[in-house]
Length: 72
Image 1: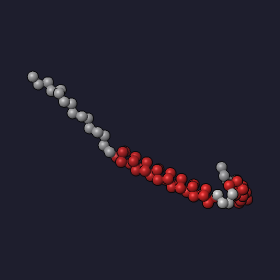
Image 2 (image 1 turned 90 degrees about the horizontal axis):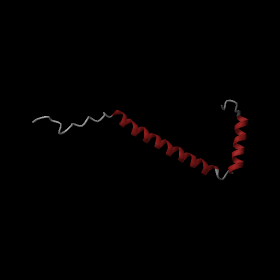
Image 3 (image 1 turned 90 degrees about the vertical axis):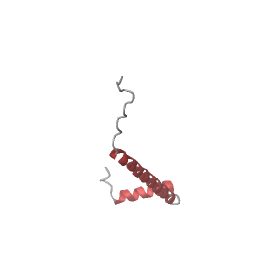
Image 4 (image 1 turned 180 degrees about the horizontal axis):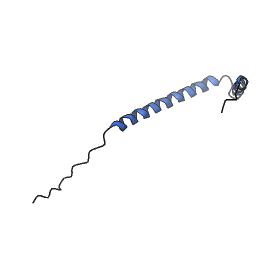
């Protein structure tokens, strides 16, 4: 997909990004992306931890039936 990109293409992309967002906003943008990635990573780790114990637990035993004795 990105196999045809060369160094000149990447340089042009950087220049376009600088023109669109401005040099002053790029550090804030990078910080925001980093924080979002950290939150996403933490949530994925939490989901894996929740799934791991659930898959190793035994299924619940069938409840004993009460009042089914046929004694006279």
